Length: 144
Image (tube, rainbow, N blue to C red; front, side, top):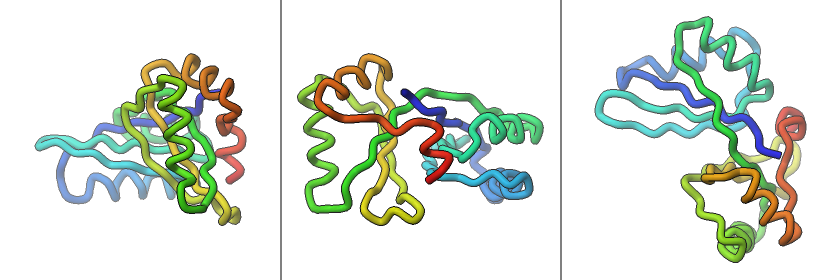
């Protein structure tokens, strides 16, 4: 049950990130999570939106290069060791994490949410489900 992450390539120039977020705001797109990585010439904004398809359409119509990537999302209890327990399950299941980032969940202060990019989302999700972990769905993300 992977969710849709939108990756946007941005020139590494002042104002490009705010130009992108302004466009999303003007179109009532609510971001759930955002991660920004940079190189010398460009950056990659990775985001989870309440409506991934609408966000991608808005970005493409605004002349941004936007692509989807499947990622997994898991709720993490807001307690000492909560993330470690989840990472141990990944390790025990033999799932390598390529990158991850987090966001807090709206009115639910008892959990944070972790976004994971792995090589094979379906296999990783099945291996983690066998450990009793349930991925958060795209619909659940939209309602957080």
